[in-house]
Image (cartoon, rainbow, N blue to C red; front, side, top):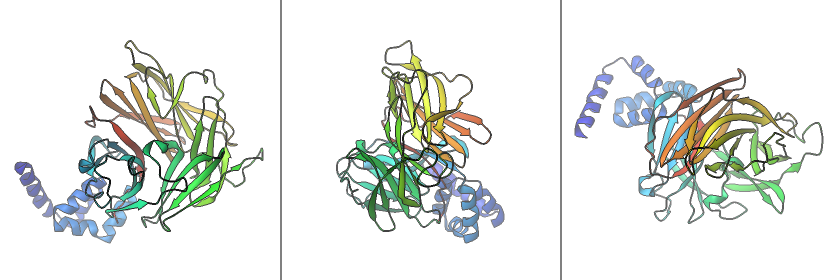
Amino acid sequence: MDDHRNSTTKNAVGLCLLPQELIQNIFLSLVLPEIIRLKLLNKSFSRIISDNTFVRQYNSLSTSTTWLFVYKKRWLRDAALHSFTDRSSDRWFRIPISELLKPIQFHGEDLYFLAASNNVFLFASNTVREVVAVNLISVTVKKIPPSPLGPRGTSSWRRSGMKLVTDPTGSGHFRFMFAEFVDNRPVLFVYESRTDTWRSTEAEENTNTNEFSFSFSPRGAGHVFLNVVHGPMESVLVATMPDECDKSVVLRPRFNVAGANDDLTVGFSWGNVMDMLHVYGDGYMMVVKSEGGNTRNVRVLKRVELWGLSLDGRKWEFVSAVPGVIEKPYAAMMGCLEEKNGVVRAALVSNCEGVWDMTWLSFDTKWNRWTWMPLPDCKMKGWNMAGISFSSGLTLP
């Protein structure tokens, strides 16, 4: 450990001898966890990184960087997010958060990671039934008051039924939205951090056969789609605008495809039971098809398809399938999906004999092109997954 510290110090001293413009160019090529670590290393680096011109340049580059965050289920005293970015495809970064969470009393309980957007991350507690928002860059944490539905345990939060949207100005304010059935009616709930209050609105049924009650294009237009109910033949979604949440509409897209009545699971699949896994997000649906393996309780992934909402929001339309054959044995599988700027990203996480395996899939809707890559080992053997989410636009203050 001392040798590593001495080596790091020597490298830092050597770097300080370079011209400042060259140092800035080197720093611009680094990802945010590396920048934060350098800022803490010495005062010279801190001054360079805190310079307004450098912050603007770095944030301009960082806004297009996509991250995948994974949270392991472990004791709060050692809580850490593990992050991977498409700008650095060879390793994971570890971001400790236990010190950040100290002001909040969770009685030593481990947490569940709900969602992320820009610098804001949401965690939920099952015992005290609270949600907290953590800002990794401003190093702040705050409790979110209970929603109009009251305190909720971690099992009540459905990944595809909620969305975290941050203020694009970089103010740190955010909206947390989720949709639920209340008295058999879809209702949208929105928390506004600026006012620290919740509001709720009942979503309107779409009665016009040609257009919705407010103007929007279902896919790739920056709208928010929250999945309320999933079935083998039909889904129920609530659609709204991220900055105009007083209006929302109910969508009931049909899934008309051969085999849709086969065994189906949403979000998480045990290999010995389900043939088809559906992963929803942002007006898209990824269908993961499997077949029985040679071993009991193990299945083999065979095909991955991407479907999207039709322009009238009344059916799921086939978009594309991952080319080639992706064969992967698994006993359990889960996934998350997001769309941003015309690119659909999905992470498929499988477990086989205690070993976790992750694959990052991307589909560019403009060029009709797939890319995918297996992620390096996250050292999760024997651990339970306690949340996964994509996020873009981590920025310096």
